[in-house]
Length: 171
Image (tube, rainbow, N blue to C red; front, side):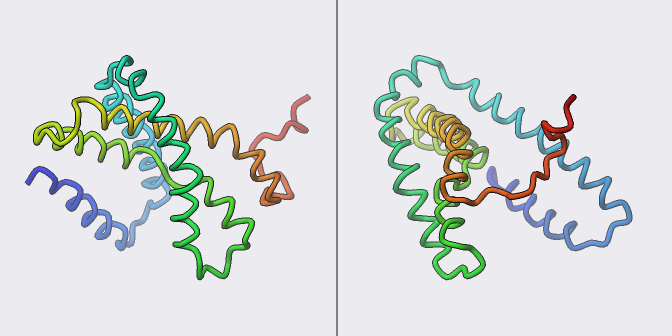
């Protein structure tokens, strides 16, 4: 079947994840590098199918949808899924509400659903994929701009800097 690859990768991941391997650190480092290259390539290939005028056409509705996702859907889903989580403070839960997962999985699924929807003529042509990428890019821009401010406001920042290169080390 055309979607059997995801099942195969999942089963292979479970099988290899439970094996004892001698050079695990080397394998994990290689996996990180390979993942970065693969994800970057997938994002470029998927976004290459979206003409810029299509994004401009969904800008108004896309912005309303994006605001609804950021301030209603994502916080509600995180709060509901972490209601009984005792190890997180209320500030940490609130911080998580603003920074829920997004990215490549939704982009790949949007591409798949776009093809299926357009084959069955369930959606207007070329609306679903641009909207998905608009939401992904918009949420990344919002979270990148707001994360530092929200973390400080909720007091969930690290007290000790653990950065690789600190400004104090620069002459």
